[in-house]
Length: 176
Image (cartoon, rainbow, N blue to C red; front, side, top):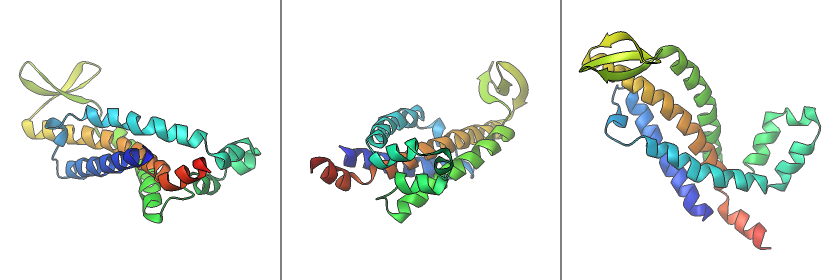
């Protein structure tokens, strides 16, 4: 089961990355694809990843250690990704770091959400229209919104894939 969840997580991460990269060319695939499915998929892989972490004895010892030890992010990631290959660690950690950067860029870039009201493309904030948009501007802001959301989704899929990866080692240690 962990193997299936891993492949789901890494495939969804790759698909989300493609959607994310295309937003830089102002191509918003969220207009053509039910983007909410990627949000649902996060829960499908993230919940088992959390349960996997809860069974990790090294992580339990780390969490019960003294405060200075717990403040060491290198020690934490070494426990978290113990049997994870380097390329997958790069995906997980890179996605995590990029997710924070993307959040701050997204937070300052848009300032509202796009919509269509009375046949006009608009930029609004809490239902209040503050700018009427052209079709090109509408596509631009839509791509920014998708970039912001997909950047967050990358984090969850990347980390879940890294946690779920060592399915062979986990199955061996659980059965012995």
